[in-house]
Length: 149
Image (cartoon, rainbow, N blue to C red; front, top):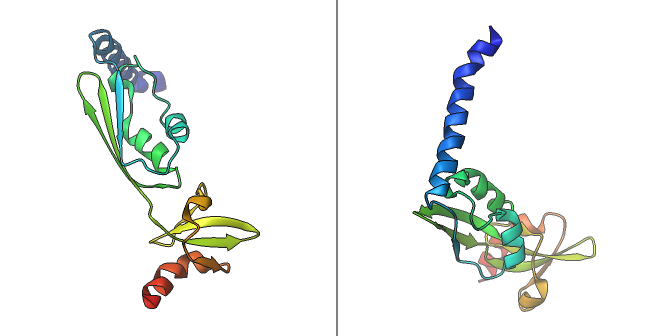
């Protein structure tokens, strides 16, 4: 009985997979990926997170899953992804804006406007930012800097 209850779901999944493959053979394949808004994230980190291969069926990409993978990159604040049929993916990212350098346990990190720590920061590029120290410094940094202005 359990097998019979799963049968409609298996048929639906097989049909979806078949449709993706057929559409891919008809030319709906990823040929270009456009990324807008990248300034500080290395292209290698971005490409590894996306894991998109040229020639893959464009509908094989789960856009929500791809969005979550990209949001796991420290620099990325928000992501918007669109398919441009027949063969392009457009990805618009908004990067975090660092406002301070946080010294914690002998390491340096960047802190953004919302108090979020950017682990993969290139601190050397932001030497002019104020240095904050203390375990809760990232959370309080935006308020403190606003008061100082």
